[in-house]
Image (cartoon, rainbow, N blue to C red; front, side):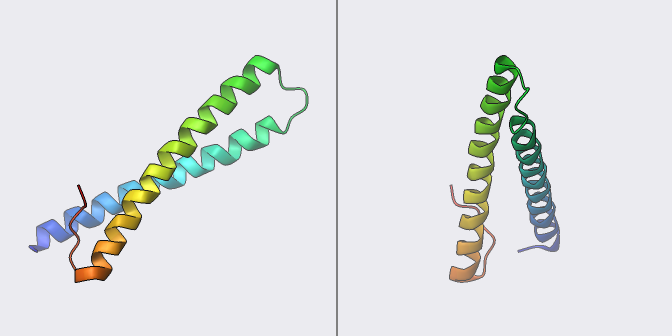
Length: 82
């Protein structure tokens, strides 16, 4: 793999990790807000819906990373699974 390709792959992994971190932080914030007993029902439902979407998106992101790690462990390459 060329040096440029390795650098690009590292940047993509960093971007993905950063996005995952941001999603998990937002999920934490949503959980804290949902713990508020005075939260109006409509707002609670909107927050819950957002949390479900973030959870699904973060799960897909984690799955992609796991596949990359597995591929690395299998043959030392950094190819993505399609």
